[in-house]
Length: 306
Image 1 (cartoon, helix red, strand yellow):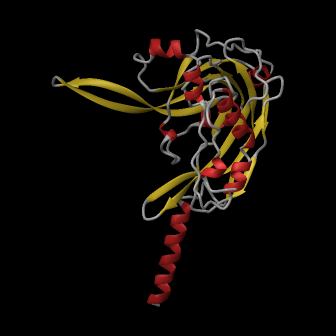
Image 2 (tube, one colour):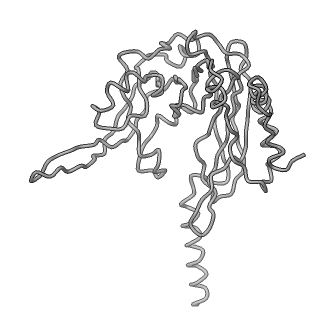
Image 3 (cartoon, one colour):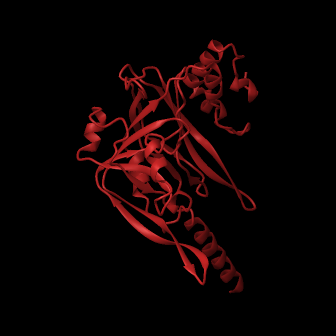
């Protein structure tokens, strides 16, 4: 009886452990990604730009660590109209692994590199969203007995249909209000009916409008539990996205801008295919290196692949 009870407890503990990762399951799935790449100054399409998606998971590393790494890669080139499309991606994964945000590299020799809508290193992004809700923390500062007390209150914000602009797209707006908002800002939002249809036709403001409103960062960015709603992130992932890249003229800026491939474990079973699926990016990087008089990088050699 004691042995049977012990086995039952063991089964229950395993079931509880697996339930903590139930959102990952055995199937990793990401939606299709589509959009346009434009020159940030001229607003004209950039053809031949490489768009790469890195599908990331987090794998537990006992006793208490975790390692984030790509399990797959897809890439494409923009057409003459600047359009790109990456189909949905699905793969079986370890049930104890967790899915993470897909990472991107958008690269064209001579232009600044884009890394995703959350990145603000020099890329402009615009995405269409449906009505969505986001939970966030509103910061407060009070005085009690001459002492300042800082605290935060959970709030909820609902956005209508419209456009999301990255912080880089609205940098001037951000600089003018960032010290006046009671929350940390993630994006800017512009209400717009039929936003998804209009963004595909470029019938949207490409420069940041003056009447955009700030969208707060959700703790769901860091806390992946169900306590925080972040529907905006989910909608953006399925949206048509406009990416605007700045033209770089100075040699030093172009050298600094050359993207690095994400780190891969040398003993990964899919290492060779992951590198093969970045062939356009590697070729474009080598083209930029050659034009700048640099030695061509060879990721295959770095990983000992002949």
